[in-house]
Every structure is written in structure tokens, then in C-alpha cells.
Length: 128
Image (tube, rainbow, N blue to C red; front, side, top):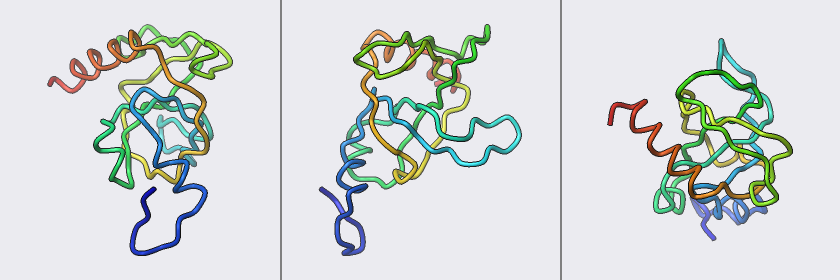
């Protein structure tokens, strides 16, 4: 368990310190600006576990139920393992760093095949 600045551990710190790449978390994105995704919705953690284990921010992809023909949207079928209620789409074009305090609760984990598709799409999107 980690805490910062000598603060006493909170329930949130205990839960969030366990966020791992490939997990789906219910996330509070707050009020959107322009075409940003906002409100409370699932998000897929894409930052590395070595980063997630020591930083107070992590990198996620907001998820949406809206299907588009964008090459940056990765379909994630709802399963017991990922905790989604219906088919959703990871928005690789909307990658963002967020405070760990935006994470509300874990829903589950996506299939490794989904993470492979996400990784490939992010490399193409970022021209990396």
C-alpha cells in the first residue's frame, strides 16, 4: 500500500493502488469539454503496471456504448470477466492521463486479445 506525503492510508488508496493494465474501472471523468467523454463510465487502464504501482496518475481509455466506424475504436464484448453490461468500445483516440482518485471501483479485466488490439491501435494512433 502506498501513501504520499506521510498521509494516512485511505480506502481509496488501498483500492486504487491495485489498478493494473488491462483492467476495466468505473471512472468519474467529470464534466466534459467539447467532444471529450465525461460523466461516470467504464475506462480501460493502458499504462504499464510498473508506472501504475508508483504514480498518482494513470493512463486510460474511456469506453462508450456508441459504435462508430472509427479505426481507433476497439470493440469489447460484455463478459463476466470484464464486468461490462453490454458491448462497449475503447476509445483509443481519447487516451488520457487521469488522477487515481477518478477511479471508483474495478469492474473486471479484458481478454488479452483485446489488449493486443488496443496496443496495436495505440501505436498506430500515436505513430509510434
